[in-house]
Image (cartoon, rainbow, N blue to C red; front, side, top):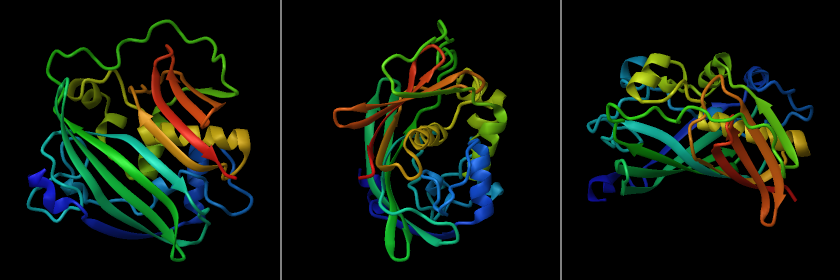
Length: 285
C-alpha cells in the first residue's frame, strides 16, 4: 500500500453539459425512445465528464498510458490488463437535458491481492455527478488490474455449450445479439478506446478472448433499460452490478429481472446459460 499512498484521496473534477443531440444518439444506440419529460435515461452518467487523453497518449491496449511521472488522476498500476469489475450506483435526482454537470471523482481505495492467475490490484473510485449544487448520481466503481494472459492459455470464455432455450422464473426478459455496430457506438458514446471491443485480432491474440468483448457498462446499461421497459422511466434508486464472465459479440445475450426478497434481482446470461453479470436494484419509492 505504501507505493500507492500518494494517490489515496486524489480528486479530479470535470465539467460537461447534457446535450439533446447526444441523448438522441444514446437512445438510438439502445433502440429506445427518448423520455417525453426531458429527463435523462438512467446510465447516461457514464457518458459525462469522461477522460480525454490525446490519441498519442494511449497505450498498447487503447487505454490512456499509465506513466508514473505523469499527473494522471489514477495510479500508474504496472499490471497491463485492466477491467471494470463492478459498480454501486445511487440515483438521487434525475438528470435533465440542457443541464451543466460536474463529475467529481476521488480515489477511495487501492488494494493489492494475490489471485489464482497472479497478482491483482483493485482500485475503488467514487464518482459524484453534480448538477445545481446537488448530487444527482453517486457511484463507487471497482477496477481490477491483472497480469497479461500467458501464452497457450485457453480462450476465455470457453466455447459455448448447448443453447439456452428458456428463462424460467424471471418476470421480465429480453434477448438480443450484441453486434459490432452496437459495440462501436457504445465505445464512441463513452469515449472508450479499449481494443478488446473493436479489434478482433488484438482481443483474441493479445488478451486471449474468444471474440470481441461486450463492454461491462453496456451490459449494465441494457439491464437498466430492461428495468425501464418493465417499470417506466427513472425506475431505480439504487443499482449494483458485478461482472462475472465475458460476453462475446455476435452471441445471444439474455437479460432477466425479477422481484427478490431484498429488492430486484437482475442477470445477464450468455447463450449457453453462463452468467456474465449479476445485479441488484431498488425501485424508486
